[in-house]
Image 1 (spheres, one colour):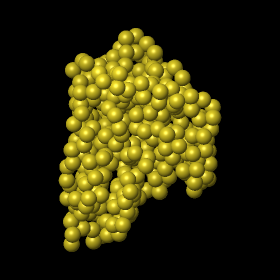
Image 2: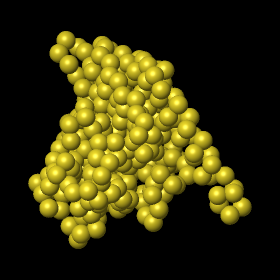
Image 3: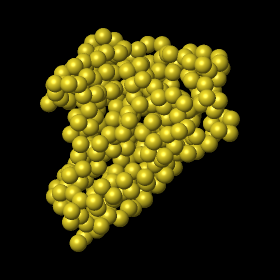
Length: 320
C-alpha cells in the first residue's frame, strides 16, 4: 500500500498537528501508512522583523502548497488561519477536523490579569488584530513585537522581556502547556482571528485516493464555522495581516451566530457587528455581515490601511 506523505512546518506545534493528523488517518480501518516531511517556509526563516512589515502573504503556507501541487507530498496540514482565502489552482481543503478552543489566551509572568497590569506594562504579540484590540481596551499598556514559536515566546516572557503575552489557546493546549494560561479571553469581547484553532487538511483536487482517507476526518460544525469566518475575511478584502476578528458558533435550532470586528491598527477606530442565520449557508452569512460592516464604516478603515501600506512600500521609503 502506498505511503501517504504529509507535509508540515517544523515547529513543535506544527509537528504536533502533523502527528495528530497522522494518528487520525492511521486509526481508520485499512488506512495506509503516513510519513511526515518537514518543509521550511518563509515565515519560519524571517524572524528579525514583524510579520506585518513583510510584503506578500502566505508566509507559512506557500512552500508547502508548492510541494503539494508538484506531487512531492500528498497532504498538507496547516493552521487554517494561515491559509489565504483564495486557494491555489488545483488544491482544495478536503477536511477540517474538530476545532480546538478558538479563544486567545493571556499569559502573565506575575499572575496578573490584563486588567490588573500597571500602566506601561509590556505585552508581547505579533498580531495586528491582537495589538489593535489591546490598544483599544487597554491604552495604558506598552505593546511590543513578539516573534518565535510558542515555547520561545513563553520563554521570552518568563525571562522578563514582557510582563505578559497573548497567544492562541489552541496552540498552548496542544503542546500540553495549558496550565500556563492566566486568563482565557472572552471571544465575543476579544474576537479571535478567523479560523483560529482549526486545522486545514489540504490535498490536490483530483487526488481521489488521498481524499478517501482525509475526508473521513471532517467535522461539519467546525467546517461551517470557519467557512463563515473566512468568507467574511475574503469579502472584506483582508489577508492575515488585517486587524480583523471573526468568531462563529452554533446555536440551537440549526442556527449560527457570527461576530466580527475590523479595527484601525492603533485601535482608535473600529466597526463591530454580529449576525445570526442558518448553518446551511455559512459563506452567505459571512458575506452579509462583511457587507453590513463595510457599509457602516469598515470600508474607510480598510481604505486608510491600503493607503498607508502603499506609502510604506513606495520606493521613496526604501532608499530608492
